[in-house]
Length: 108
Length: 118
Image 1 (tube, chains in turn purple, brown):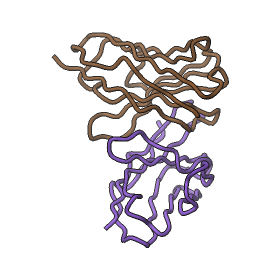
Image 2: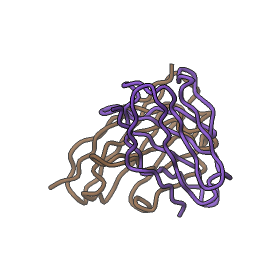
Image 3: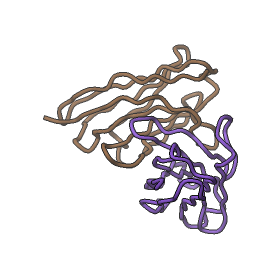
Image 4: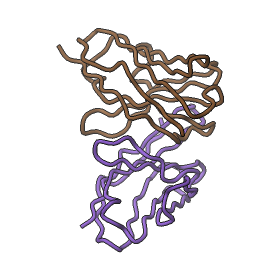
């Protein structure tokens, strides 16, 4: 089955740029979606189709996907961005949905 | 506005059964795939199952295949998850989510907690 690998944690100072990676075999050939989950809340979609933002998501959130790595980039990080972030793909060969293990973003 | 409200969670003994429901509103339910996703305490997200808009296409994670059954009633704008032969490792918050044809999850409910314990 398809596996997505995320770093367990990323730390960043306020105002700086955070990059959260999601690794998978030839992930660049798939569409990657990203979710933000704050403590005690349901996940929220922040990026879909690699780099599209749902309405209401700040432009500070962006995404890219190439080769074996997809990246969620959060610019000008704010304290309110502190959360767990999950990448997700649809493995069309098996028709299964796959999540990465999640990355805890800490704002220093 | 899109709203998804899960219900039916609770405490159940190992080997027992539980049926979760998800009431949808604010969109044309019969136009969308729907999914169940779970999250064990302190753990990450785990996809459980999805069902196509008509109910004709269904997939399950290996961890629940043969024990869980997803279904929907488009007339009632409702999604269901019948969970049988429950195990301690099924303990989790269960979320329903609206699912696009490319299987991303654009709206989520608030979740319902299922605890499997003797």
